Length: 68
Image 1: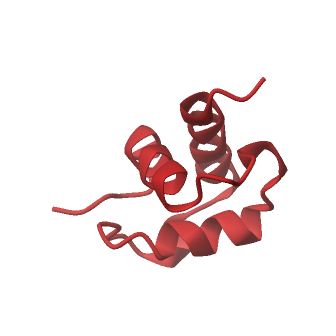
Image 2 (image 1 turned 120 degrees about the horizontal axis):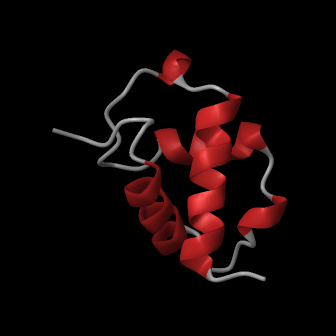
């Protein structure tokens, strides 16, 4: 069972590990969408995402990266 769009915290950890030098505050949703799809454990349909889900993932990533 892989990651789904609703797994914001787990996706944030994977993104932080895959892109440690990226400041998540400045990631565009189009880039974020592609990076989530590239996570090997991710297993959900691309069209199921939306601005609300991407925002939740971005906020969780910001917390994971501990960016102020």
